[in-house]
Image 1 (cartoon, rainbow, N blue to C red):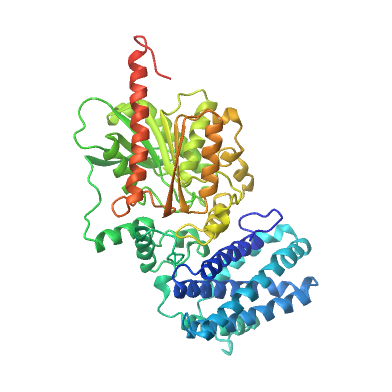
Image 2: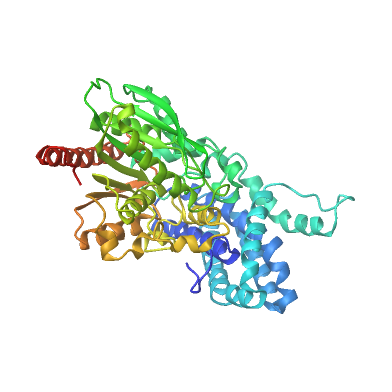
Length: 531
């Protein structure tokens, strides 16, 4: 499910198509007979309830004003059918004839509705309303989703016409919400049946904490929601596993950012570190340039510190929308240069530095190498890109088959891009983001690179393609793919076997490169440098 014309991530038609793709993928799980049938239907009901309310309050009222009266009437009629079917599904159980009949009808009606919207109505709307309105309507669409769970009272005397209309539209959806009452804690899990038992336990734990969907919240609200680290900590607590993983020492430094201010950088030193300088790994946290911080990715840094015997440093760069692209990238580059210049001050060896990160941390890993090469500066000894974003486009089959994945899904990626490139939409085409647009010469500047991808991740296809591009350009490239796990799995080594394996892969990659760098330095003439 994707529109066949260009949109920006925050445009209303783009956001609508993201919702369509996620729901259709969940329909596919139901049709294939996999996953938790009850939870799948409950999640679909929740998503369609929010989606319908937002369309009916933001989009459909405009259609008659611009000559789309027939389209308006047809869409509202189909929405009413969908709502009635959702109520039936909520009061019946999988396997019951009434449930299965309602589900078959829901799938058919929804797909017909989606087909009409994406092929005819949304393109016509964009043409008549103007592309410049799409972003503002996108903001209103998300705002409507945030207010949808409340119950307006259409007969209250102090309410205006807008509130009465909203109340009447919401009324059928109140029945859906009533039926979903008490099920909030299953709304954020992955019920597809495609995860391993250990991975399933993590997404179930995250969902049990009751997070609201990040992708409908304002950034400051989203940052207060439970993160992937909270899910792992809950599983650890449930299993009696103590944490966090111990290292020799952890210290927070304050270093300059790229805008004349300051940023925090955490330094992890392994136990038993002696006087000899140790190699250094700069590990860049993820969060789509908007969410999370170095605390969220603490477990990854601890694991790499112990598995490599290296010092791990992690910078807390500025985030959007307070500081949009390229602020995060600039801070990471500034942090890397600071580490090169000051490594000795915390026991590090400036001739043996590696770089890596998760999600957009993997993006900024590659971007930093490219920027160093452009400036003629010494590159890192090795790079590790864990499920990186490598293009701002909705690239590859994983945008369809993992559109509904958790914790990262297609709608969340659009939400992140909407904020990260606010006011600078051209930033998504910048080489620091569009790694799939790199020339062979640009790819060739990368040091030995490990790319890690996960099955239940909408970024899977673009990470795989980046690994193929690197390999074709002659870069020593290793690609490791893990089935049955999700985006953000890397830091879960305490409770997930695949995360332990992936961290060990990354550690081996770094230590091999550090050994090669030391050998090269040892072979250099007296006073020479290793490059």
